Structure formats: structure tokens, C-alpha cells
Amino acid sequence: MSIDRLSRRRALTGLSSVGLLSVVGCLGDSQQLPIGVGPAGSRSHQAGHALAVAVDRHSDQFSLRLESIDTPSHRLYAVADGEVTAAGVDNTTLYRAGKDRGVFDLDPLDELPHQGFAYGHREQYWLAVADGSPPASTAEFDDLVVSPGQPSRPSRLVTEQLLRDAGLWDDVEIDNRPHAELPAALTQQAVDCLVAVQHSRQELADWAQTVDDQAGDRLTTVSAGSAFQAAIDDAPNALGREIAPAGWERAAMDETVDGWAVPLQWLWSPSTDAETVAELTRIAHDHSETIREIDPLTLGDDPERLAEGIIDGLAVHEGAAETFDTLGVRNGDWTVGDAAD
Image (cartoon, rainbow, N blue to C red; front, top):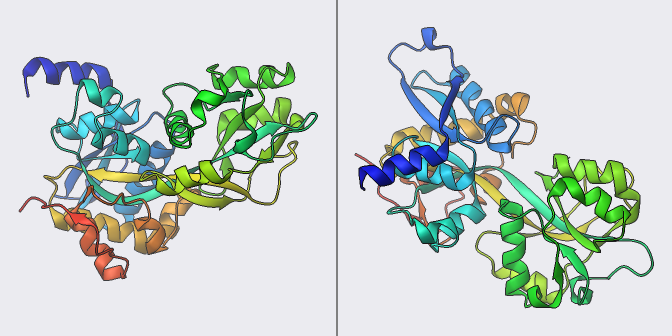
């Protein structure tokens, strides 16, 4: 990799240490691992903080240092460039990197990071303005104004992907306004349908909470429809889910709704030794209660949920695969990468 390319990436990432979250004085000669997370308040930042606390309490081999890196794609570049050992990234960004789509078309990764264990899911489902006769499913979206999410956001990228794969993208009018403008647009009847986002079955995204506060009484849930559901089922980066809408107080929500979940997982540099990743995967499983104290949206100790984010055909880190073997959730179709000696 050229110096110019590496320097440009470093400038793009805006990488900055947010501090060691371990008691360094008690750790002796333990190994310090930098991991890339989003800005304070993001899901990856919260999950990284919680994992660092669990490592601090339950391991004398490692400490974790969080490095704040704004976007998921920049976190992947930071792993590839050796700036961080691991990064918290959603599966849509990983999938697009593997297909050289978007920013990765212009600057592809020479080697993808290896997959590890999930720390959460971003859950999404359709809502419509309840005035008059709202669509029963996405099959009735023809000629409606649809907000698939704020451009460039990971939640928008997967929604656009699914709409295109379902053959619905050209049948609707796409509204690209930012999330902050959606409440006013709903009140003015300028948008007919939008995507809701919540995390790990528990908590609305901040912007969705604002939508509920200001315009939630205009909204109701919408079924996925057969074509859109087929697109979810075929998507490597999304999981079909019956989602229980959480956090809505004003909107007219069904008890459950067809939706899709995008796993969020820790991705590892292939140069990270297997014992290190195996131990951190074990800590995430065995000490989920410690993690939950800091991050209530954690997936807990269910090994199947920790392994649920793995995309078939992309490399799984050898250390994570070893721990999943021990926990009895190893999938024989996984592609296991070679870790460092």
C-alpha cells in the first residue's frame, strides 16, 4: 500500500483515542488491544466500553483501548491499515466491502477483516401514515412517497438494497430528507411511508424516538409483503424477523411486524492470534452479566445469537470459530481464516 493511500485513509478516519478503559496499573505486562468504535453514544462505542470493562474484570491477559472512528467503512479501513486490532461494524458495511460496493468500489480493501462475535442487532420495519387507507404491505407502495432512511446511513443502505432486490425501487418516489426533518414531513403529509429503526429488541433509535414524540400518532405498522420478504430472506447481511416494536407511545403499533435485523459484530485483523480472539469471545459469552451492566442492549450469553451475525462465504476468525466450536454452535459451512501464529 502506498504511503499516500495510507495517509489519505488516516485523514479520512479521523481516528482518535478515547482512552484506556482498563486499570492499567493492575494489569502488569498484559497486552493492550486498540479497537475501533463509533463516536460516544453509538452502539459500537457502548458495546466496546462494556467489553473493555468485562476484560478488565475477568482477564489478566489483555486490556482494550477504544479508538473513536466516525463511520463503519472508515473502521474497516483502520483494521486493514493496522491502526486497530478490531472494529465494531454492521453486516451491511461488511457485505458491501466484500462486494466492492460504494466507497469500496473506489478504494477496495486488499483483505477483509475476519468475522467474530455479534454485539447487537439493528432491527428495521416499515411504517405508514395511518390517515385514510395506509398500505397493507410494501406490495401497495406504488406511487407513494417513501423514506428508506437518511442517505449513506447503514440503515438506509440495507433498505435501498432490499427495495431494489424486491423490484420496488422504481415504483416509488424516494424521499431523501434527513431524519431530523421527518416529523415535520409526516405532519405535512409529505411522506407516506418510512423505515423504523430499533436496537436489539429493546430501544428505538434516537431519531425514531423523536418521530414518535412529534408525529407518532400519524403512524402504523406495515407488513413486508412477499417480494420484499423474499429479498430479506436472500440477503446475506440481513435476517428476517418478527419484530415487536419497542419504545413507541403514540404510534398505532401491531404487537409484531415483519422486519429485518442487521447484525453488528466485532471484526478482527487476520493478524490477531487465535488465542486472543478465542479468549475475548469466551469473555463475551461467560461474562455477559458484566457486559449488561454497561450495555443493556447486549445479546447476552446465548451462543447462537453471538454467532448469528456470521455471513457465509466470508472468513471467520479462527479464534472465534474455536470458541463457537466449544459452545456447540459452529456451522460447517463457515469459511475459517488462518490466524497469526
